[in-house]
Image (cartoon, rainbow, N blue to C red; front, side, top):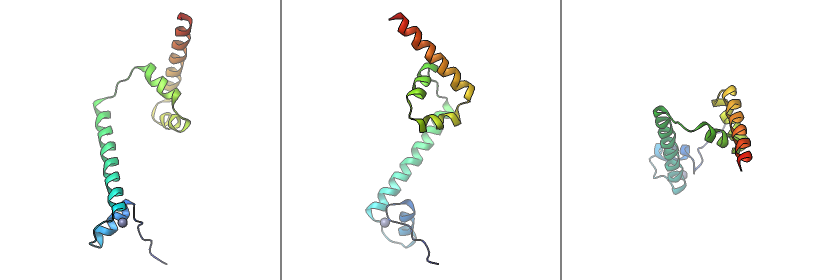
Length: 102
Ligand SMILES: [Zn+2]
């Protein structure tokens, strides 16, 4: 069976160059840079999360309702269903009251 070769333009490609003692090509350098940046963003977001992210509930509800379905599904895995229901109820109630007032 033929051994799979890491493709250029991927982090594995970058590592292959490194293993072979080669200078990485531009595509692999870019892939490695992007990978490092993604890791940095994930690390920073975890740090921010540890500090606590506090947003007004109505803002969270609005963000949830305006999100595409794939993002809503991701949020559904993170936020308890009863909390999502309550946020949406609060949001809808607020919107109704705002409409009445105008
Ligand atoms: Zn390469």
